[in-house]
Image (cartoon, rainbow, N blue to C red; front, side, top):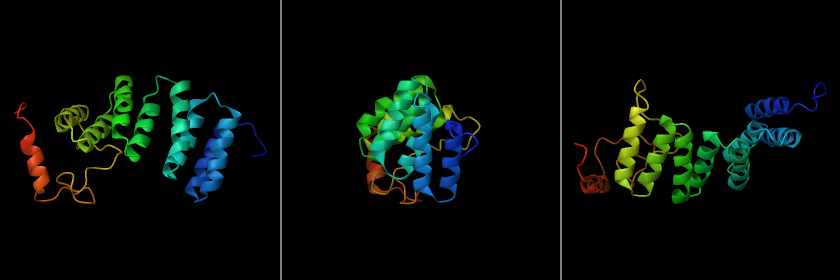
Length: 185
């Protein structure tokens, strides 16, 4: 960029164009340049973190998202992104407080759904049910919660590997369902 070589937003847009064009290394460099030009702007760190996350560079993504929460502590997305990295790493217990912080700042259906999925993976089924109920309440006009985390898969409930409901619950799903006290019926 010769017209505005010190434009952080310009480098973020350039990074997005590189990414869309399959030029991921150049995209990372552009996002990093945006951070270098303005390290105090949270959106630059978010763009860099998102690219690192998509590439599976969890530690770099986590570092970028932590900067987001430092620079803009009222930004729920920073906390939810940290939770997403922890979830991907299988650190479900660590993701719970991050999802809760995100919900405290902005109660959104996808955050509730992601927290519900995390509780499900932790086998905290009552909390999963309560959280999914909140997700449903937060989406009265949608078809249902569509969080950004993977859905429970085969062996963890009544889901197929593709995430679509099966026509018949697995034996473990039936046992898990029966073990949940009927307090909400």
